[in-house]
Length: 440
Image (cartoon, rainbow, N blue to C red; front, side):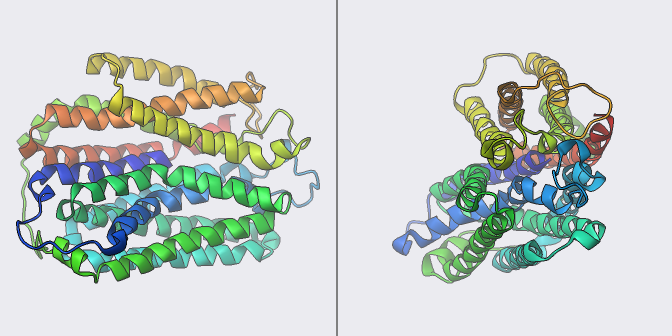
């Protein structure tokens, strides 16, 4: 459900600025300069850090499989994978979803009581500390306490994602205070985050080859460095004259009391139900495949070539799927298919019912019930590419339909309603991955 988490948080990122269009033009007085474009660069780093934790842990798939391997099987055969190996990705989805929604809800209800800058810095600091803790375990032999380490990894992942949700949602409060290009560069960083993470993983594996321990150590050190550098750069930038000037264009409010009637929620729901349906389709499809099942898919030449052992999962399952996801979102934004919303809902449901079971029938190991129908790597790549492209398109389409069907006054309420239903969808869908792995 990493993508599901992304869309819930990025939905807010893309809309907050729209609601306060008037801030695009700063007050007509002497405006301080953003010296050396420091704040501009910091916003790009913030965008990367928003989705780096969830993408980072998922892309380290080979490391988790190694940590939870069957130590009595020197061949590390995919057919003999342990229960911990088989269920780690799906369990991580559940462990991440609940804290993300809980912390995100806290930020919406009570976050206004705290200043923006301290909230972001504290959240980034906690994420960095968790990164350091996980990095320390790379060189620790956990073979004798795999179950304990399994619990530690999931706990760390959940805490990290929870605080990261606070950081991202709080960062959106900066968008209406800064010129529009700062929001755009932040969104660019968010879109490029997963691809950057995948490339770092591939580079680390390429440098160290079969030495998975050193490759993962380098990978996690790079991730820790990015988060730490982002926190330090943000702390420094927040003290600059330009940053303080932009922050003061909309003074922070310590309290806010807004009541939304049930009739208003019902009226908004009737306007945006297609968007909610599209997200439900996306959420259920993702929970049932990526990464709960896709993290278990192995190459047709498994244990034969360097490609199959070291690069198949990082390149095919993660890098290419993230590229297709980005292409799907771009297509929805710039080259949308001209079809009624209800027709798109039907088409998306049909495609999901075709592509999701197709991914189940790829070479995911271990399995005891379903046959492997699509045995070749190119078949898996094609099916996963079509699924992630469709997912990216649906994510953007859901957001765009809300913009089109609601007024500026209704926009904030509409996205709050949308976020509420997204949270419900994620909680309902998160255990599906565990069930699907069990029926393979």
